[in-house]
Image (cartoon, rainbow, N blue to C red; front, side):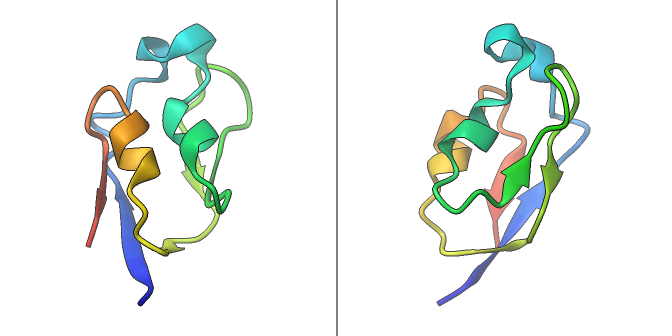
Length: 67
């Protein structure tokens, strides 16, 4: 069943990820998140996900959740 991915930009701090590369972007197997440049905040290409929670586990700041 599809789930909704939620990204809290107030908690998102790419500088806390390795070289500013968002760990959640790298972890998403469906490429639902993207990042223009290192240290930029990620953007959602689609809020609909399968709910694997890989991005949630990868984010060091807890900026992601699934509804």
